[in-house]
Image (cartoon, rainbow, N blue to C red; front, side, top):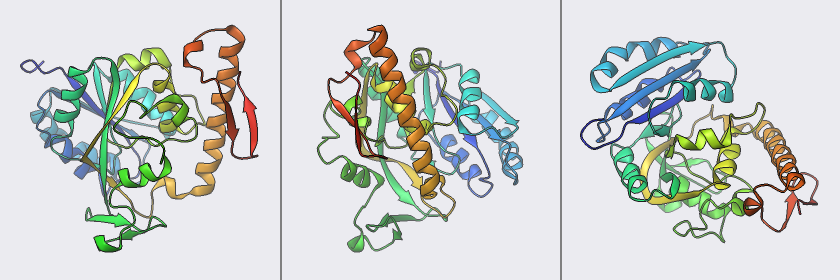
Length: 293
């Protein structure tokens, strides 16, 4: 611990982001919060990502309390995250992507909230949108990058997410509730969560949409907080995995099937009843109603 500030683990899996990964690491180096360990796992990149990571090691060892860089055979995001979680030594985890950027005060501000609000498990923020050259941009209705703010439909990623949940006040305790997340993930990037969460929800199962699955599990056991301030830069470029709509749709369906199966198991054992909404859910693929009650 440096002073009275607890250690924060900044972690991310890296895959084929040779163009961006050093910039991501530098954004962690530039954090105003001092007590940080940095853990990066290269998930079998086929480009020079691993080399780019290693080139940063000396600079990182001067800045951080602890630095761990590893490479492994490609196994997907859940596999890489599992290894990252095994390496964490802090009680707080800041999880990012290997092509995104942290604003300098992100950890400072989110940790301030979490330390003052022990009943919250996760804190996130608004994200600006940047392009492949790290230039700030906005989105039109089709999520194409535009640079004239007067032509923007969505000025930030947070603006876009709020459109997906028009009935949710992001500044209220309804933010991050299980019932609202069941219909799809709307938790922004750039979040810090308590490591104790991992002990309660278990490892990410293979084949699911890891971020949606993760948020669903957290929402069953505690509260999430949104800070309406741009503290993170979400990179939108041609190789974003989320642009493969058919793939994302398929993984989303698998995630929903996993969750439905989990809910039925809870009902059968009469456990964790307080986390189950007393409603029927819409299974969007077939437009069928599935009751878990």
